[in-house]
Length: 208
Length: 208
Length: 208
Image (cartoon, rainbow over the protein chains, first blue to last red):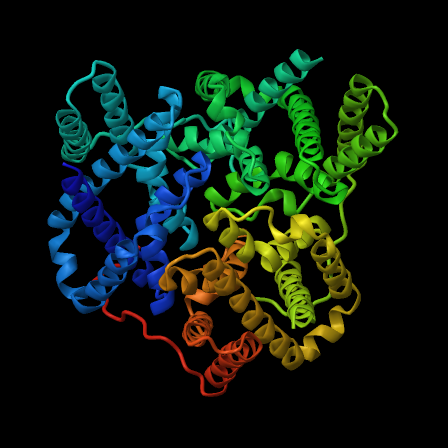
């Protein structure tokens, strides 16, 4: 199981890095910019989580496989730029899987460190979404995650599911699998049925 | 006195969170985006301060009251969106009070950890202003605090006042009260008399 | 040698702070905004590096000379705003030297802490470039370093040079000098010959 999680984590890192590289390329960044954006997209969420929880050293600083996987992702993006656009469904599936794995690892780590369940769910969500937020800040956009799609909500519900099953001492392997499934199924359904979170609509709040 | 400071801190968190939620709503973010922006506005300054001073765990990760206060603030913003606009004077007063409390807590913490007075004042200022800076970066604006109002200067003078009184062993309760007053009075006067800091006016520096 | 490095570090801090102050002044920020941007430009890269490596306290929090040098740089920028524009060649040389020193200090620190060589090179690069990246994010621009110039590449090659020479037990002073030279020469040549990194040119990746 540990190996499976590790491999899923690397695949998630790879796919997140590709999404970062594509985003950077659209903004006409050069090779260095593309690598940095791919990097923060892939490991930025975990970095912010680890800084907040004071958990050192961070995984990619201890295990350079993460660095190589990210560089590979940039290389693949440069090489197959024409093909990647056509693989959007495959990419979306891997991205959703990465989302699940990152949530799982974040909530599990916070739980092991003894944080309150509310904080654990927040840490799981930070792991999954803050990489994309940093990507969008660095490329001068309002983070897309703040504007559309049940993306973070899927992570939060996955995190809650993990904690509930963990509380009832469900077998860890089964818990991992169910948590992954919760995140993946909610996100797939959200996209299929175009679910979105409410927006404060009133205009009395003023405008800039 | 400790209880008073704690309650003022929670009120400050609440008001800062509302200011974040309003700002996010103006940018048409969805519920998740509003919560995140409310969150970083309220506790972002303290987080950056604690990361820099290596002080763990952070208050909101140890005391979930902060999390609930922020969620309550978002809820109140959604519910009373029409009324909040009319309460701008009340909001401004609470915001100024939050500013004072955050400055006080930051400079006191840095002082207890033995940092140089200059660093203590910087830490007090970071506590109060970096939440708003992060809010503005995440909503893709140049931080408003860099452009208008004697906002940070009030925090710096409050921090200096705290250290001077502390140096002369003034009773802690009196010191707390005076520091709060310094921040509040300076900000109120700055707004009343439209005081602003100077800007480098020359055009020879070029433009982008 | 240590003294030389310390003085070069302060000079690098000074020049980086001026570049931040100029950038902030162009965006019409007030005095406080200018100071903050000068500050993060000068010490932001080192801060991010130290947070990632969990190395505390940070140099500017332990040695207030850095704070005074930055304030002096802001003062000089306000005073000599007309002259600084004409000194662009001198500024560029000092900036390149600062780049070399920051890279050197970053890679050396990571190496002492026992990180993998790949991570050491990344830490050296983060020390030099993340200050400028933070400056650009706070002034609402896409980081310039992601778009033009062999800037980060010079840092990376300097970092690699340091590690290779260190591996062969070359005398430390000589190693320091050669690493500085590598960064400086590569950057000067890059600007002279207008070298740039490749950009992903295909449009099939889509646009925002």
